[in-house]
Length: 533
Image (cartoon, rainbow, N blue to C red):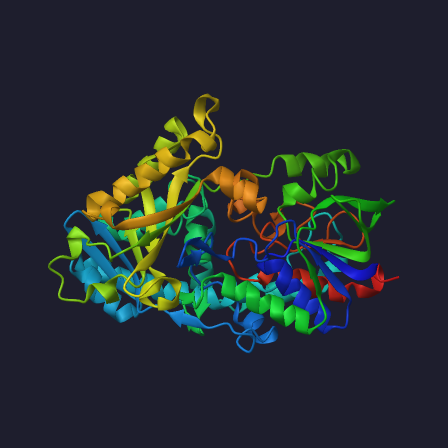
């Protein structure tokens, strides 16, 4: 059977692209390797009666234009905004950050009045930058290996966006794009617990020291999102992250998209300088005028399209693309809420304080040591941990009175020292995580009914994310915008006519935003006359 467009992978970006393409009357087929759709945005029942998001776990980056254009609310998506943003626990101390900035300022003032004032100013700066950055994320980068004249419209749009930003904010943006998150926050604040809390935003899914240049950008990357239209807010998808991709699939199918599971792509059908379709592992051939890859760049180039089929410089750049996020992901089923020592004397209801993220990351040195441990031993001896308890907002995920908890942990190497395999080390590393939580919440381990563990190797195996990288590649300055994934392939158009990249390995990068898929689809629609003939 022949199609206008074949999409490799049915993750959230692929589903987003399919919806946009089908809306233009194109005949689209999606080819998913696994027996379920959704990629990293899936909900699984990991123990009888207990469901949770297995990989990605909170909503903010999902772009409002994607929600609107794909009519996701009409197809069942409901996002519940969290009242609490986060709480960081450190022994008997805790820094609670309510979702309202003015309330967060009051909590910070308990540690430092100077930091409270500085936080308010920084929050205003990040809000000011975020609107322009959000629009830049929705735009197409220029391609360094194509003539500037051929990309004049894309360059004009990007330039127009940046020209609107006040001069002072441009200077702040330059700092965020180049500085380490450690140096950046040390220049703003004095209290360790606040700096540790914010440094995590520069470390999540980013295997690097908090003093690595450009890690401050990852802090910004996690700030420009929205939940229910509120800037910087985070929420939970009712039913888990799988509710997002299920709504996307229903939207795409309503527009005529053919979604196939257990359909692993083995190779590309290349005819000279253009792609003509895909060959599946089972031998079936899918003819298509164009192909959009939702997979990792090093899956597309290296496995599906072999390196000997690529130009030497492009092949070298792809081989050198860095992809390792240092992430370890767990879910636990709980018979009761954890009792954190730091909250025992709190006058605020624990249910309110715990419905955001619960963090163990007491300082920048704590985050730095977790990274150093991973470099030396394979994983952190005291990991950086972000916990979420979605059942405080959505009681459909567990039996009455019980809870599920997500644990997102840093830093854990994809390759362990001495040739050790994660298949042998998985449970030991999980014990390290649970023991760390137990120190801050005595009795936590006794409340666990069951768990689900995904090591970096599990993430790589299940999702084809090379290096277990949740972002499809490091979000560092040399792998962003016109360099994502590599020079010569930054505007979604790959080195074969009719081939496009629309996963998180393309601009603007990782997180459940839908923007790489949306932007790539719009590029395909713009180029339709070129590849449709």
